[in-house]
Image 1 (tube, rainbow, N blue to C red):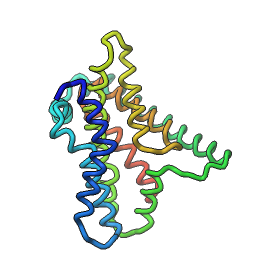
Image 2: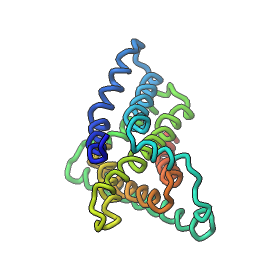
Image 3: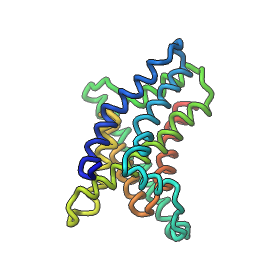
Length: 230
């Protein structure tokens, strides 16, 4: 697969082919609708759309290396580790402030639509049919690993290589964060996810591995889940 075609083909998979494949697999099951089945559908969709491409796209080998490769021990030193923690905590705080701000502004102008991801989580929690561990794995752990493997492990390096060498190094981070936020299809949460996405891209480029962005993504998802669960 020519490298210049890999990015548009990966986007085509995320936007169209992946969802169609997951829906086809889901349609093969003839089980009655339950909360557990809904969790299974979410799990299958997440893995199919975001994780599966790493197995057949050429860039996937590099992404898997960034996922399983050893982290530079220098990042475990005091000052470097403190830097990563401050970036992570700062981005989480700023993203949450922006989310609440845009939620408030939306209500002021009469916008009745909420955050689609948040509403889906609320529906699953209200059903009370699934234990928290299953919810956590499906809605926090798997998305954190799968989405980082896709966005930071595959999309970000592909975008970087397609841009001129003279481009600002922040541009691939901005574009990856933009795609990350847009593909969540949530107007209210767009800015907050863009901020989080930029921080995730920064952590990936800075450490050269996916451990830090996966951990930050997982913490963000877990906090959101706990907020609605407790």
